[in-house]
Image (tube, rainbow, N blue to C red; front, side, top):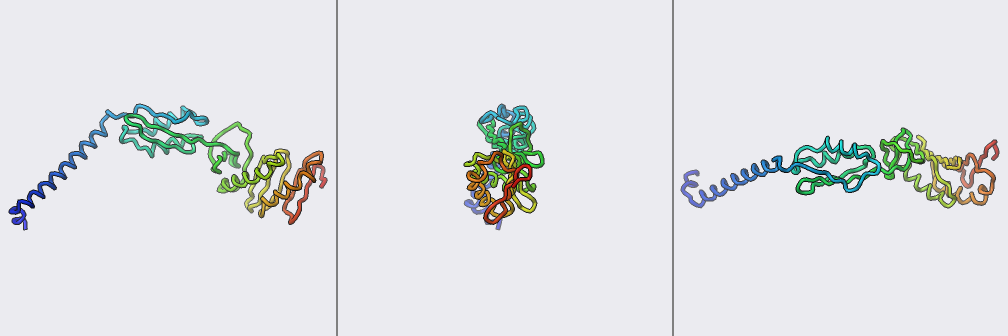
Length: 238
């Protein structure tokens, strides 16, 4: 077989071309690998697309110092992104190269919507995160994995209460999946496990003609009745 190959000029030329091509590819790969690892492509700057509002600049700079390794071509962008997302008040980050020596960073910061049972905060996406704020925020209470559900219900019930100019100070979801509200005026609304939105709609419809004219708001309103509700006032009056 090999005698036939050596005696066949066309075959020899083909093998020569193949070997030359493989050698050239190997040389190009080696040269490219050498060039991109040279210290002539250091990362000299990182640019934030917008100034942070809640995240501390010092913590962002410290994260950059921990994460950025290698040069412009070899830096691990995914590792950089994950490190930035560990900074308090940073919900998400994106990182991209800007030739020839810069990284561009975009940070999405947390927007606090409420306080959670554990002392943490809930963002506008219904996610629990660690953070501190002096803002006056409503309180959410529920099971560890129920923050998104509580957030959705808070928005729906807040919209229903808007015509009465009443706001929710606390919304609670019990282990038995029963809903309870405490309004900013001190009234507690017991909504129960079923048809919470329909029950609150009944309260909103009745409030102007039955409760708004009273000198003080009710202390407690039980809406778990089939077609009505019971209101209780300070001093035991109902």
